[in-house]
Amino acid sequence: MELTGRVKARVRTYFPAEDVEEALAELAGVETGGQDVERVHAAVLLAAMTSLERLKELVALSRVDWRDVLVAGGLADGDWRGRLERGLGSVGAPPGSVSERVATRVRRDFPKHADEALQELATTYGSRGPGGERIQAAVVLAAKGDLRRLKSAVRGSHRDYRDTLMGAGEAHAHDDWPEVLRREFPEPQKGRRR
Image 1 (cartoon, one colour):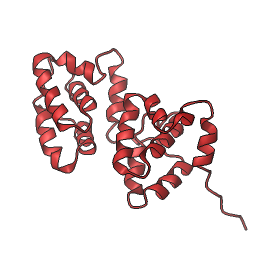
Image 2: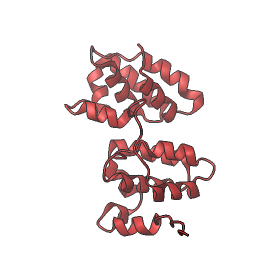
Image 3: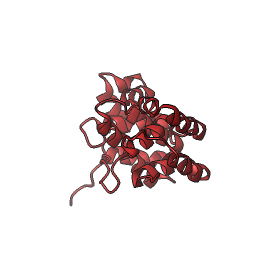
């Protein structure tokens, strides 16, 4: 079964290079039960995350009852299209933005992988909305300079952004988060005008 470009892109993001081809081949064997093919592929990916073994289990489960796969991936309900968009993103669509103060912190925490970290961070749940900076900041804090942790936190933000906020520390998840944001992500100093 043909995989869409954004499903392939997510496989390449979620899995180490040595597992990508096997994961793509496994996904091609998913039973969709006549449902939207990308929906079922996305459900498998969102439920498996970075586990090739879990992906294989879900593909096997799809052959028994594809509906269980939709439930496991969080795409069984009526809002599945929105969840699919948040989970996979739109190929060719511009990613959400990353504020200058979060980008500055990313460049400091990920000096060798800043570009890759910023691209990934731009796909964080809510990155196009008003709470996006808070969630992105939580991802950066939770990652502690580890690119793999950052990617995992970004994926986690699509499952439940509240867990992402809690992963950055309790203060980030509660009312005093603006102070944490100001302290941990100060606004970059503007150059003096002459």
